[in-house]
Length: 109
Image 1 (spheres, helix red, strand yellow):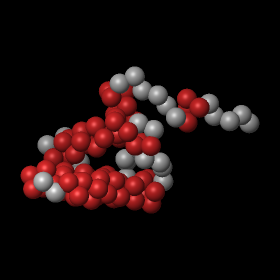
Image 2 (cartoon, one colour; image 1 turned 180 degrees about the vertical axis):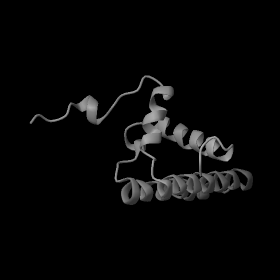
Image 3 (cartoon, helix red, strand yellow; image 1 turned 90 degrees about the vertical axis):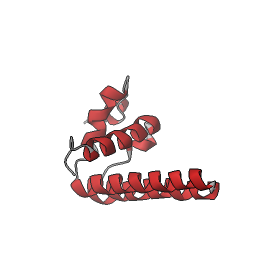
Image 4 (tube, helix red, strand yellow; image 1 turned 45 degrees about the horizontal axis):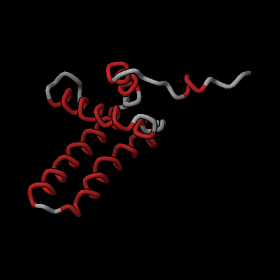
């Protein structure tokens, strides 16, 4: 048996439109998705408060609030590696897109 090609294990994407279906496939577990959404919302709130109050020391807390719940979702519910590790900017945009689609009712909670 031959090993899978690198492209198969680590797909490359020409743009976000190609990436987003892959992103959604990596977030198919409802608990994982909810952890992502809650973490993203909490990170946005903490980040906004840090900006409004000039509390720059809160920025690491905002990052932790966003990433820790998401990574718990990947490791314990999805059993896959976070897309952030290979596609950090597309993954961040995917987090915000998934949040927007959920808040607008386009995606199920």
